[in-house]
Picture 1 (cartoon, one colour):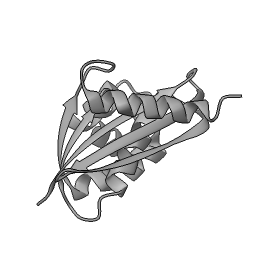
Picture 2 (tube, helix red, strand yellow):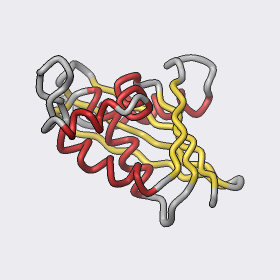
Picture 3 (cartoon, rainbow, N blue to C red):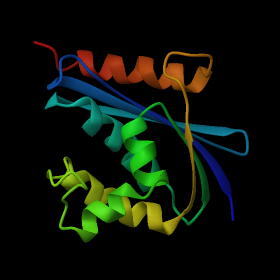
Picture 4 (tube, one colour):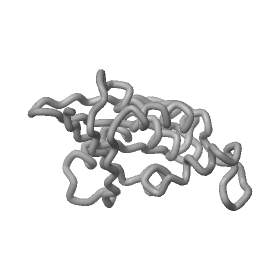
Length: 146
């Protein structure tokens, strides 16, 4: 099984507001960079779309080392909260509806295809690829600013 390293980030100017996401996939010395955005979105939606887009780009099941500065995404997956939300009809343990159900429903089948290893990293720190993702995501969000 191939091991692919994935870095993702999302950005939003205002929350909600114009947003962007980015992903960098690395395998065997090769690199693929993906990015996109939306006019009216939230930071968490952009974080999720970065991960979704990266996993959708993989052509076969892989071991994925996922690096993100989003506690929302990493904790929901690593601590398996999202599967609890799904089992309860997309209701969180505090009885409030889980947000971004549409994106979680896209992400879960992708996560289940791969052997996932989750890494939370501090944003705007020393991780070069995360900083590149942040720059790309911010640049994408600017395309949607009025």
